[in-house]
Image (cartoon, rainbow, N blue to C red; front, side):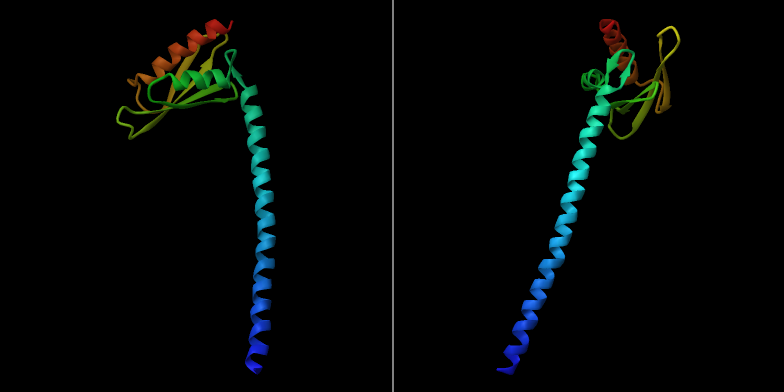
Length: 134
């Protein structure tokens, strides 16, 4: 009888302590999630506001989705960076595009090979979209 008087309060105290400790961490996790949601919504708004050659990021994303082996394109200041994969899918490459003072599209291979077709096809589709946007 003495053992049950000692064990039961000990078990109850342990369980209540465990619940109280986890309740605090659940509150922190929900705050972290709400912060992530806020950041995600802000980045979506900021992403759509950027333009390159008169095209918004959404239009550029559409061109990427219609270009073989193109992974993504991101507007970075006055540059447009295109990530694409090789035909085998083993290597990833980057080409950076800028516009000169006359509006001509200039591509510079940052990482990869100059004989890849993807950046050339993307550039042609981008030029066509920029003409239609004007």
